[in-house]
Image 1 (cartoon, helix red, strand yellow):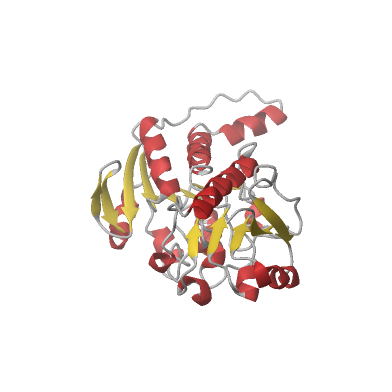
Image 2 (image 1 turned 90 degrees about the horizontal axis):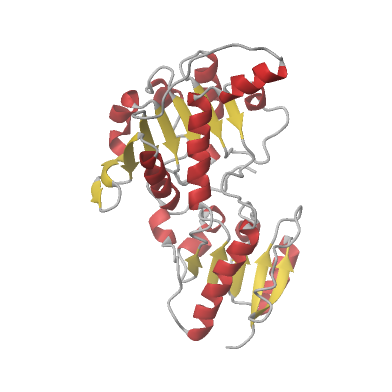
Amino acid sequence: MNRAKVIVVVSPERQAPPLDALEPEAEAVLVRTADELRAAQEDAEILFLNDFRSTLLREVGPGRLRWIHTSSIGMDPLLTEAIVHSDIVASNSRGVCERPIAEWVLGVLLMFAKDLRRTIELQDEHRWQHRETEPILGRKVLVAGPGPVGRETVLLLRAAGMDVTVVGRTARQDPELGAVAAIGEIDELLPDADDVVLTLPLTEDTRGMFDAARLSGMRRGARLVNVGRGAVVVADDLLAAIDSGHLGAAALDVFEQEPLPADSPLWSRNRILVSPHASGDLVGWRGRVVDCFVENLRRWKAGEPLRDVVDLRAIGVTASPTR
């Protein structure tokens, strides 16, 4: 296998990623529509999914594909019956976004603790108003989802002096994170947490997991940060918990519907930070995910094991997130 043919799925609204590193290795066929994907599938076995919001694979199906690589960590567009229960190899771009997302989480927790939003508001008003703020040292944080992003987040928050409890699918002892509690214990752990950070994937088990009942189980004044998937949190219930004063604040980088509609009430709450699904996007990230794919493509052509292969069966089939 020399110069392979690779389907590159890109967003209709964005330019293609920088593909210079791919050029010597493969013929890239850019695809933005369902019809273009159907045509490209006729003689291609490899697909580079560079648009993590794309629903094209759900609409068209995998065709003759043998390997799909995603530019994201999440595998949502691949969690269909036709792909999960096939022999298609799936891999992702680990190592690109995990640390940036963890830094974003630390940043918003610092913003809340140091009341930086109010500082900016007072500056805009030319008002000198002395205030006291909170420490992060010893602050109790519960991180739900010890995957690649959750793992990096736990380590960074602990390095900053925070007291972090980790919740995963099953209880276990992790050599790096220490004790991981089972997700079934989360309701017992929530009342002790000052901050709750969600790095969970979207599955049928996690969809709507943080509803009114679970949010009410959080400590009064606690803060919620979601960098996993938007549909894990019931937005209306979150708004009610914020408006009632039960929750102190929320920082959201992910939403059930993206882009977030302009008329969403989430925009108008000054105790909710709205971020456009950009917590992991450092300058140059689009080139870095191409580099990850090219490295794996060289392995594929050489018959070597791929890096960052994901067991889709372990995640399971899930319905398409609302766009």
